[in-house]
Length: 189
Image (cartoon, rainbow, N blue to C red; front, side, top):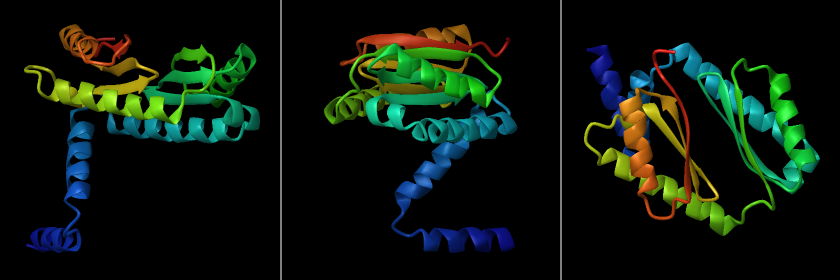
């Protein structure tokens, strides 16, 4: 009875915040369906924040490059742009020093950082890919993370090969996608 009353109280407090409730529900479903343990999910999230913090502390990288690290199951996907290999390598060394424990997939491109317009378009592409995946029969989207950087779609997750192949096919056939890069792991490994 107490749980029910608490739930009703929370619902009334969140009145008008349907988006927050939906995000919480979807996020909770994704955490439950994730192949990673809850502890690993927390470790990955903490590592994401630590990478962002360490990269933000590097003034030259922060001011001249656009570099992000995304952690999945202890492995790091480094994406973005750096104007030269010196800054790219500095960012990679910084992430290596954190000692997260997994592989570092270096997908940082040498070139000028992308514009606001390009980043907005990347967000739109990610939305389109995720939407198409949600509408694809037999594809468990709760186990797949989609990230777009300069028209390149990166697919991460711990999925069976048939799920990986289906996700890649959906992404490849989405308007605006220039390239699809798989960073999947098998649950058997």
